[in-house]
Image (cartoon, rainbow, N blue to C red; front, top):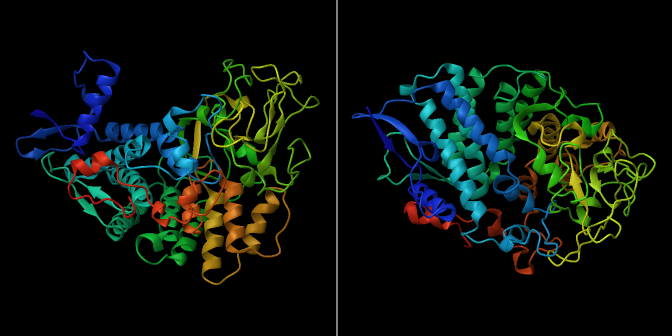
Amino acid sequence: MKKTFLNFMKSIFAIALLSTVAVSCTDLELEESDSIILEETDEGFAGVADVQASLDQLYNDLRGQLEDQANFFALNEVSTDETLVPTRGTDWGDNGIWRTLHTHSWSPSHQYLLAVWNNLNQNVFRATQIIDQRSAPSAEEKAQAQYLRAFSMFFILDLWGKAPFREVDEGSDVDPRVLSAQETYDFILGDLTEAVNNLPSVGPGGANDKASKAAANFLLAKLYINADRYSGSANYQGVIDAVDAIAAEGYALESMPYFDIFKSDSDSETIWWVPASTGNLIWNGLHYNQIAPDNTGGGWNGFSTLAEFYDSFEGDPNSNFVGDAGDDRRGWVPDNTNAGPDNLGIGYGFLIGQQYAENGSPLSNRSGQPLDFTKELTGISGNAEEKGIRMIKYHPVNGSFTGHRIVMRYADAHLMKAEAMMRLGGDATAMVNELRSLRNTSTLGSVSESDLLAERGRELWYEYWRRNDLIRFDQYTRDWDYKLPESVGADFRNLFPIPTTALLSNPNLEQNEGY
């Protein structure tokens, strides 16, 4: 038996070498862990040696991809009206890599595009190896791999509108064929339709850090509700049926306080979580002087939200202390009367105004001035360190780097069903108000498309879905603060460009329109 190095994309090896050169000019030795190493006989692919180990590794790879504040998270959140990473002094300048996402001025050479393209396509290829009959997976192992392949292919389709695909027997001398949007949609649908029958039934509080029938139905609902982009027409009844199937597994809206859902404790909403650290989402926006016992180094003073997104919540427009918000999902900021060990002086949700330490004393910035987070930014660059409202959904009082990141939640499914009903000519008002009553916010008299999009924003911020929602509601290319004027209405930016290196490595790929 011999070992053969097989790239999913021919460029991966070159990129790995370039990365190695950047770190060290003397160490160019290729490690098996750096690449896709296949067990191969003279007849070709012979199956993976250990199916469960390969499946565990695939889950771990995906965990790392979802944990990162850059790459996958950045494409889906920083490119929206919800999140931006403004430059403060020289902090977070990074040669404009964050700013170009928010301003919609990215190019095919953007580093995060290439990283996500390679990661997702590599996931697909590794899942295909596990699924292959020569690997002899059990029915459930195959279904798990089909789910993970479908998840990765869904985002390739959503981000780029097409998907390359390589069979396990095709070597690096074969250019992967490229599936159209319709073909990719059909491929994902086939995987999920088969997988859902062989995945376990796992209800709330169970082992839902792996794929289950509920997780597969959630992804089916996402596929169906966005299908007009992929196949020409959405399947709204399919959305309703998939969400009903999730409810039949025992999932329901959670009545506990909103931010308690994001603890690692059991709840009725969490359908799929991954053991990814929550640390990035906690600390990437908090100030350097905001600390926790297990992170005395403080925050990184980067990520913020737009004033207009903050204003979409009910409550005082200029402060968010206890009693100022009319929506639990906006959270609250401790002051000198209620800061303490149970919150470390760090708020929940949207942090605006004066910030306090655990002992109730007002915090200062590094210059000794009051640490008073302002609603408005100077711009996307040139800001003082206290500019901008910060966002925190996972709280360090539960552990500054706890490995529990939610990817799929029943509240999202509930709102997808409400949207499907509305788009079929029904009324979503009762379902939306059912959720709003649990979040202690006012009742709506009626619900329009714009109301439903706003509700999804309030409920699901920082949960990977904002870009997808904005595109579905035809709002991704609208104007918002700090977007470049020439990018407003540029609908070709609903898809990202195929990375330059990918185009060079596979002549079957064609660049997306507008790039």
